[in-house]
Length: 185
Ligand SMILES: Cc1cc2nc3c(=O)[nH]c(=O)nc-3n(C[C@H](O)[C@H](O)[C@H](O)COP(=O)(O)O)c2cc1C
Image (tube, rainbow, N blue to C red; front, side):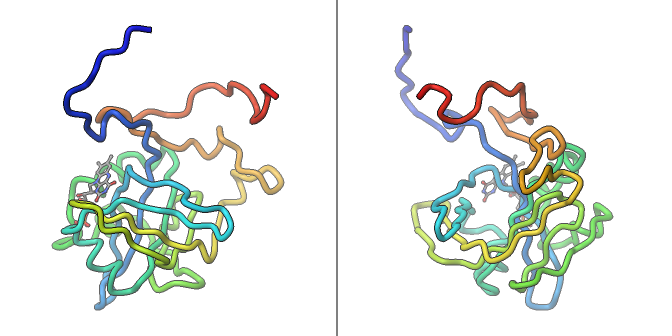
């Protein structure tokens, strides 16, 4: 394998990004959505999810004020809406209304969830790492709601949930199933 040294590594050299929609709400009750590519599980017990959010993002102001946020995983059918939430600011518009989407009341947090997304996780801020132009905001998952039609027993069906990944400025869907975990043992 002939590897080339990259002089200036960028975020695009780490991939793929699972696309999530983070939902939040303003003090005067306007819900908002920000598209986030940089997210990950940080810990499984307790379950903590991290999101990288630009320190000047409007949504971050709202998240800091409530201390919580929703992580919603869109189905590929919500791709246009996900892209919209990633290129328009909610500072001067209501993205839920623009998209005809419904804010779903959460059970444990102030921020709403997105009714149209098959998976919605309620996160309460546990810790924040100040790293540079983005903060890594870690939220403990305190509740989850999942569309019954994508569940097979307790498991999420990867084909039915049809998540979206981002790779080098493009959106990609999940490919074929390869193997189960630990198949090499
Ligand atoms: C595919 C995609 C991924 C993005 N990932 C992030 C991210 O990880 N962190 C971030 O702060 N902004 C990210 N953005 C940019 C925000 O979604 C964008 O600035 C958004 O308009 C901010 O909304 P707001 O002003 O309502 O908070 C992403 C945008 C797109 C299209």
